[in-house]
Length: 319
Picture (tube, rainbow, N blue to C red):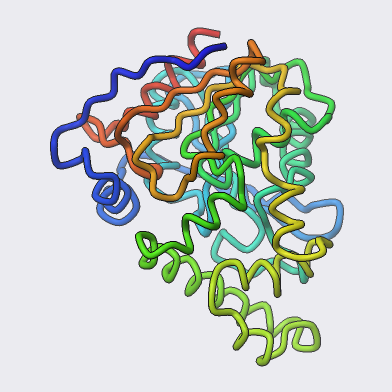
């Protein structure tokens, strides 16, 4: 489908992409969401923690929520999504990736932008243990890339999977990494790197022979982290090989489930290759909305409901 015109027009203060990003990531809070945690033991012996919140009435509709880099199931963009969905007849399952639920995961490997094998296990678990007739996916940033890759890489998509929304998606991981390493994003990159290194040092306690102090000292940028840890732990040649294999851009032509991508034009994390205009034009199952404003996972809205939270609900309801 062609690009969708956007009517998102925030107040003047939130027409600055950095302010929109910072408000959403650091200042915003969401109350009133009751989550119940379930631990899913994976086939390789590791675990994922799933944070469930239920609709106000019994329902057969579920949205699986996927957070971004170094996020978790309690981030406001996740709980805000869960809240509006719960209030409108959808259960929500917020997936905490390996090592993201407050406890170091058991294996040397962790999570990454293309780890669809874990998403498949979550979906299979839900289908085998719960009774949902409609399942939807909603992902943010890394989580958006993950769900688009899952939908387009040739997996057997269950009939219950009805639609997806991906917000602030780095469709080209290399292109996004280049943006994050630019001066305009230095504070974000430093914050991500600090969090990743803190987790890597925790993992070093479990695997001292595989993660050395010398390796950690070599990590000066996010790309270094992917060269030294992500690629080695997940069987890629190096960071560039990881970016090439896991970018969702190449899988968009094969997506057969209605999917909406919302990438703001003022998102400083995204470069030109992260706006898949040509791919969307050639696939009638894809929809692309590129508001002028919103920042990265920002999209401020009235009554503490972001534009993308309302937009995702409307999209799911339209299917």
